[in-house]
Length: 290
Image (cartoon, rainbow, N blue to C red; front, side, top):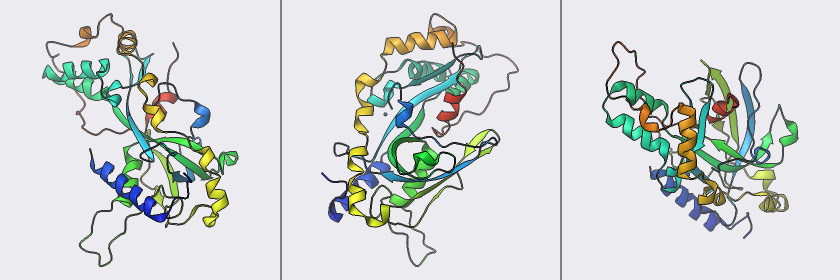
């Protein structure tokens, strides 16, 4: 099926995305060549213009989502950065340990569980429109990993919340649509050592390549299958993940890291229920090799 589907089928996809968003999953080893990442300057800031694209003809939605754990072990020298098997509806050793830690009711254990919680990440096809730091990427299709903050901006376009103070309400925009979608101005700033995407925004809707059907249809062959990323064989087994977790935690059994009594006079960070995968890239960049 051509990427330039009839308008009715594109509208049907918009409704499907809206339904999925209202419901409240990537590969074990990513091929970095296939993934586009924003190049930032020495201050940790960067900007680019990208266009979210549909999935290929076998994808139900123009994005997939998955969970990943990313945290530093107690030695400070090794990291546990692994995709969670909970993405495919199966048990995961890190999630099991976090549940065990949380259920002790001890704040110190709960703070550990919060720090090691799974983080939600999305993957979509994108067309790079403008990449000031890497102009050679412009006009090419990549896979793009992003987190909850950027997905929230997509949600605001696809399924806008009615504003009782406005006479004219915002109309839903399927940002993944090649004709009725919109370019995304990605602006990242490093604020207190964390990437901030608050200034990122969508432009007004416009067709890709000015609506040139020949150029748009040429994108078909460049789209990556997103559904394949979630195939069970792309996730490490429970036993392999457990062995890795044991090594990072520096013990022979994860149960050794469950404290049965609280320490005295320990200043604990507040546990957070927010799940955000926007900074997974930063975890990866700071990975210490073994």
